[in-house]
Length: 205
Ligand code: ADP
Ligand code: MG
Image (cartoon, rainbow, N blue to C red; front, side):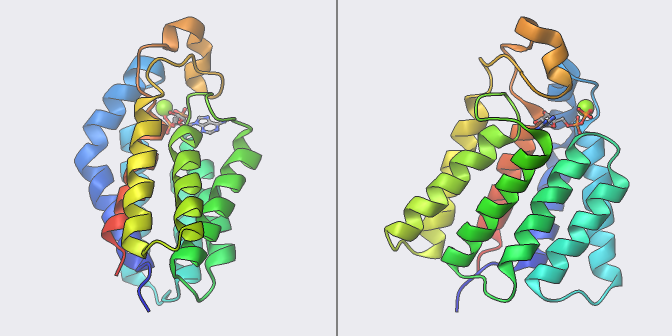
């Protein structure tokens, strides 16, 4: 049955983060403290090292291990938030990983981020990329789309959600300290979250 290759997801996300680390840090320099790229690069490099070291092989174990590593190794807000995403995802994905399972687990991950960070759609955070992706996945499941089509739609939704953060005024996280001056800058966390969705697309087998 086609589905998500969870180890490939973690590895591909790490590669994309590595390729975009300077961009993520530059975005965070404009609205935060210029560490989002280094935070995510450190966390995802550690997540890949943990995969290399250990026998985690079910999608749930891989995502749970990744969650723990991210919480432990990323100092910034994004560590606990991505950690919570992967932990809640792991709790739902269990053994199955077809499109409907992935959509359900992704939604659980998003709900965890919202519960932890209290951000709503439009607060200029990673939720602005994750929530449209979760909605696109749900719509694809309802329409009985293939996994590849569902993931393509999720990528488009996450990237347009990311782009839509630019004019917004931040209401959560460090960028909110800037008030109105946060407008006109793309949110770093929404940018990395769009990479998370792209990595899932590239890891769909
Ligand atoms: P820090 O802000 O601690 O330096 P990072 O720079 O690694 O952490 O991450 C910043 C990103 O985290 C923001 O761009 C935003 O997308 C996300 N973020 C911050 N606070 C929240 C929150 N409460 N809910 C959701 N996402 C958040
Ligand atoms: Mg930062």
